[in-house]
Length: 621
Image (tube, rainbow, N blue to C red; front, side, top):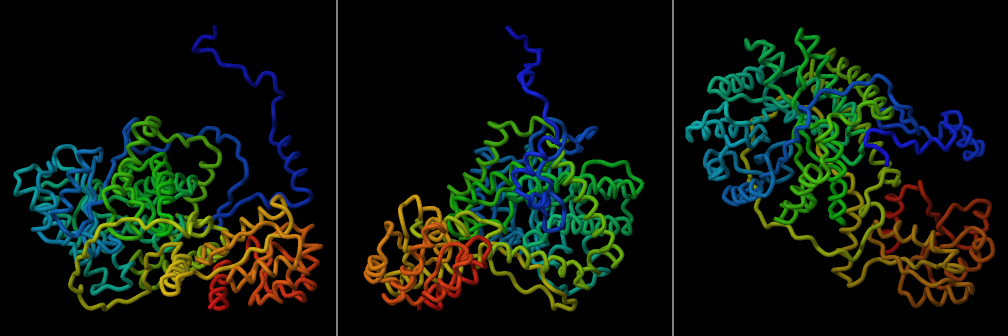
């Protein structure tokens, strides 16, 4: 019997494989195509190789204490403070270890949030022992900034030692300016206000941290990992400078600042991004003459990846994002409920958001290993590249005068806008996929329940005297969702959706692949695809089309079948009254003959799906 300390020599029967052996096999498979075809690029132009060796000599990135779980944060954003309190108590009783109090007007409110009054704070926290080991984070905006003071006053009224409470106050005027695209005040006017609030909170015994360097601002607006990291660094340094100028020692000031990052479903980039921030911030601390300590990082699953259509897939995206943030070393994670893009989430959606983290922590034990990505060649490479690129952009922001000055000059916004445009183009062409929204849609999905809640309306906040481009939040699926909404309106008004007839040619083995592709292609925009059995008789194709009630048709089969049947089938469809005929696949050498027979467009991977679907509506109506 093999002892526990013996290594199993399972590989002993196989010859050792080398990188060169692998390259030879790859070159055969590529059939003359360049190897660079397998090398990926991020939106920042970072290189992702298809295979990496182990990174020798790598050391773990210091983050959470060894073996410590991240904090399971749960959003409290119901506009009714009493309902919010019910949610908060239930969440804490069922596994949450912290509460994210979202106030109306905050960057991450997404249309909801608590009223920023002392009365609302009192109701929302009723019966909650804020010094009992739970964590509280505040999400504030300019109109709700006084909520931080109200929370501190609530702690004082309860006779609780502020130092015994784990409260992150979330003051972030820079992030608010970026999202709003304006400010009533200049940065020199903002500095004494924010530092005064921080010093006041510290003087009454609150331990903080107080100021949030919020990268979600960039991520929500469609920005890249490098842009998000650079903005966090610039914001964090701006708050450090402000505190130092206000007379706070840098050793104390660094504990007053923390970071927020978005976590999305790109597992490797998310893990590398969180690791990179810790290394970058350590470099800043060293430049300040400080011995590095791990910065506190609060993670939130990404807003921009949420979809309104087939929202249950959001659970999978959130799971991957949470997994990645946790392994990347996040100190706290907030999971956006899967129905948030549709409205205020109900108890089921909130439970799923909470349990996503509980399963990963308590059943999968993800927190048991510190920095498990250490030494993995791919993650180490991405981490290093992110550090180098983000540091360069951070220096550019600093040379412009800092974060606020860079916003005034639209330096940050121009870069984010370019990345967002590239991202939107990839979504339109389905090079970047959102399952259930841009791929594999379900036209017959059931309506998802959300709570009926009236958002809090806040008064305007000052007159905008400093204006620049706003970093407005977006969701990637919105253009496709707009088409689905259009289809729903047509169904409601006319009793039927726009339709396209799939003229499948040959046997099931011949047409299934491209018919499946075409069905997904058109139904992502709400165009109902009428599937058919295979046809070999062009006359039968035309007759079936006439009986279908559709105005459009799409030929589906493999190339060898198209060679004999596509032209007569297209002529039959045209004769039967088809307003527009598509063919699934690239036309190749038959294009001229196919177009002469009546084929108008070709659908295949890589075309601008969004533009073509928008044209379909013009043709179908």
